[in-house]
Amino acid sequence: MIQPIPYGRQNITDEDIQAVTEVLRGEYLTQGPKIAELESAFAAYTGAQYAVAISNGTAALHLCAMALGVQEGTRVITTPITFAASANCVRYCGGEVWFADIDPDTFTLSLEKTRALLESKPKGFFSGIIPVDFAGLPVNLEDFRALADEFGCWIIEDACHAPGGSFTNSAGESISCGSGTYADLAIFSFHPVKHIAAGEGGMITTNNESLYKHLLRLRTHGITREADLLTENHGGWYYEMQELGYNYRITDFQAALALSQLKRADAGLKRRQEIADRYTEAFAKAGIAAPLVNEGSQHAWHLYVIQIGNRKALYDFLRTQNIFCQVHYIPVHLMPYYRQFGWNKGDFPLSESYYEQCLSLPMYPALTNEQQDFVIQSILEFLQA
Ligand SMILES: *Cc1c(COP(=O)(O)O)cnc(C)c1O
Image (cartoon, rainbow, N blue to C red; front, side):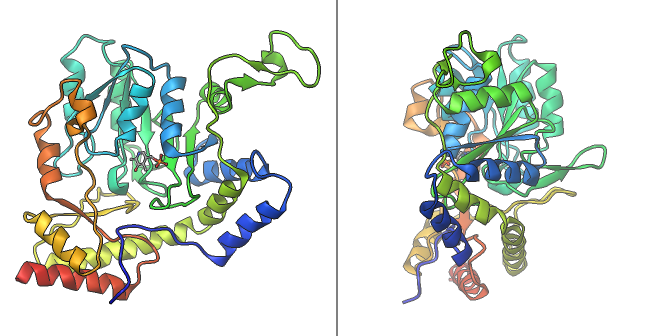
């Protein structure tokens, strides 16, 4: 019996273990120096000015929605093809989630559908847009920025799938995912299936200094110790809780793990690209279309998604071979929780037909060529049967 092959998994090296145990033997378990080290390394990696490490990607989204002022009645647009957290962050703050359908080629939030939705309501009706770099394909945020500006909206880039990804803007510049060039805020996750594992963990990046400072406060209960922000000062111990924040901090040993993993991010991305190329080449003859990559873009290959008519039969067959594929995603608007707001089957036909046929194949740097060949051979065997 061969080892089970999941669709994604972490890769932990001896250096990672050493980085974590060093912290465990040291002075700080949480709020230690590794957090700031991770933040500055991650800011450098994405090209953003500021980075705030958070306990997980979902909490990062929540704080972004808070910092941008989402509250009851605030309306925000996102894609149905994403993890529910991209939408849930709006609900945490009492706002309304609206959806626009996906682009049929890229499977990311459609610029045209988003424009049509914005134009269908008076200006000011919507406050924000949350595009997702789905599967690792960078959204063209230059286009979304122009649209958002026209309608007075902010942008949160959900870049959980895309550390290391980039696209080329109209000036021919390479724009990294999470660089803060066009989006107000971007978020990442350090969940084990993502590029950088910390157990749990997340990051917000931005070029906006006031949002950055606000996020630092919100991450730790809404508390500040900054002298010039205090309304009184009783002495060295004094701090003020100036608004309702949370404890969304990451621990120092998680930060050490993420930092150690970040050092291998480029190598991991290179390996993901190789795996993607091998799938694409092997399936070309079998008539399985490769995921689209825009010219001038670096796809980050969090997922390698194929479209297949008899998806359930293939999924079940691969399970018998100990290959555990996944489906990304069941459209968020069809979740029972979101249906209560009136969303229904048929609302977003492109997302729904994408969902009927999508399958995410094993994709992670530690996947060996032999394992991948077995996956490919199993799929081809299924197609020929
Ligand atoms: C993983 C993921 C999240 C949530 O991240 P967690 O760290 O698991 O909370 C949000 N959005 C997308 C698109 C994700 O893939």
